[in-house]
Image 1 (cartoon, one colour):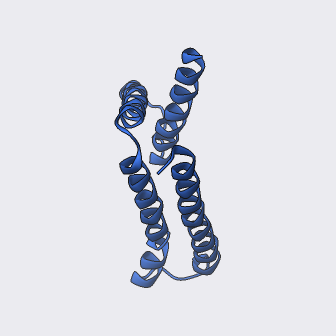
Image 2: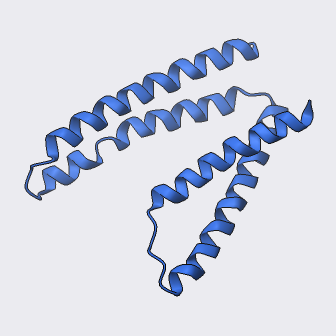
Length: 128
């Protein structure tokens, strides 16, 4: 499979999963807002995780279709982003020890994903 076809297939799979995720997320959020606490509310609150699994599957399939060079390049970017995230987490952990507020895991996830994007863009720019 050519690289252009692989990327097209990946984007179709990923954006379809993102569409399902957004549909489930907004539907469930609106629906459970006024619901009393219960096991049903908890299950519904967790239901957007199912489309997240579809996104994960699309990413795993894409990485499996990549050639060895691109896969290694991507894994290096992810490793650097993981290091950036770890440095932030450890540093902020010290700040929490002196009274700074606890942060959400969404912040950590955003730093990791943003770091991956920034590292990828910087490396592409440096290779030109």
